[in-house]
Image 1 (cartoon, helix red, strand yellow):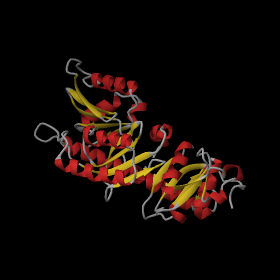
Image 2: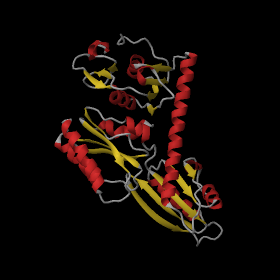
Image 3: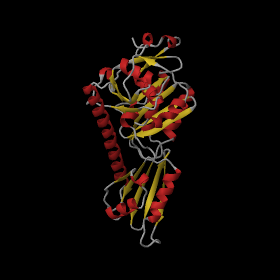
Image 4: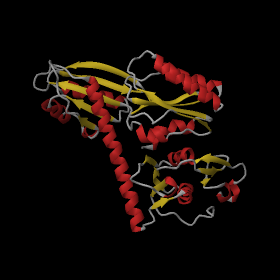
Length: 349
């Protein structure tokens, strides 16, 4: 997953509380079931020593800042300064997760999150379109009537899409409608927008479209994209390991060395379990243990969970971070594809 989407987490001061839970109810009003879930989350936050300011921010997000469409799971990360991440997951985690720690925990987002949470949905026919903007956890729909432009009926729709994509940072465009309408609309869009467009072959049922069916199709597309990214990373990693090119690293020692040297292109997170790593006080360098840190970094060093620290270090270096499944089992549950081979590292022992 592109590291840019997590930049706000890097700028926020800890400690963090990260919670993951099932939340598939589309009703805007908090349900009794959600209240019970929050009660359990609250008890666990209290047990782990979360500050009241963090707990209050989480409660507001869980109960009040519900997103337009419940997909199955939800991720909320907060600090004492407020909520820094609130989004739905394509699938819920197997069980609720609560973590209170110095760093945010984002692995479930890498596994089940949405790569492009901001997107346009265009449902078009020959007379115009309904355009729905999904942006910053809000949803807004508008109708565009193009019947007054004979011969170029979808030009008005295309112009509105261009306007919306120019003013915002939509990561994707999904298009629904008969094949002719979709084809004509795509032809009227510039290449920079066409390459972000995905046509969804949803059937018109009794003069209309089922938006739940459309959302399921979007989610399926996102899952395929996620699977494709995992497949690509796994194939590259395995190929580089196989040819011993020096462009793949596995195990905590080798990955920490690559992070210190800034050579990681893609960090691959597998089953790390409860492994830990060490970092200096300013979070500028990382090693498998405090003893393995460069000597000048040992003062004030701290031990951190690897599944929290390694993604944060990778994101701060601009690397892509991918969660893999059982098809790939790097040593210590962690691997990386490198931009260049690492050099001998004095801090490694």
